[in-house]
Image (cartoon, rainbow, N blue to C red; front, top):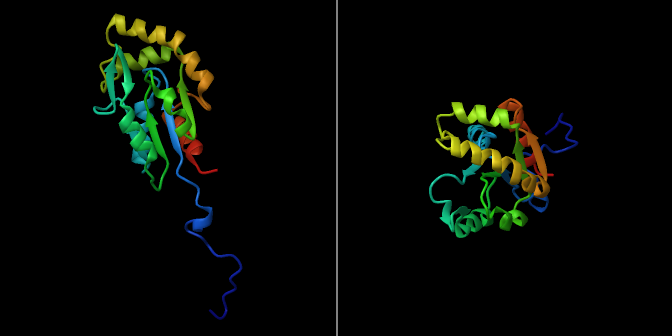
Length: 174
């Protein structure tokens, strides 16, 4: 290597002794705040994502949607090379908060949420007057509890790219 002065090695990965464990981020919030949209964009960027509204991740128990705790526990116990983003808003998610490195609340004003729900084509929830009333009730009763227990809150009325960039930053090892 004559003629080359090597002062600091360029590391493509941190050495094994300093590897940070993969971050696990819960993205939660009311229906229509953009959780699914943000996760779809994160997936396009190569991140691991799990949308818990998809079949197999949750079940109806005593009239409430809850996570299948066996599946969520297994998911959060697994290792991976990139940050894991999990989205959902269910009654038992708080049981898993200690297994997440961050709990991120996506929030938006009611008019933004209702506008998104009216125009979305990927989810029928919120199309009826009763469901819209439920969303507004959840916004008033559930969102404050999520806000009190989250580690981060992102204004989801912002453009999707900005929301995703904020989520990526939260997922960086640190």
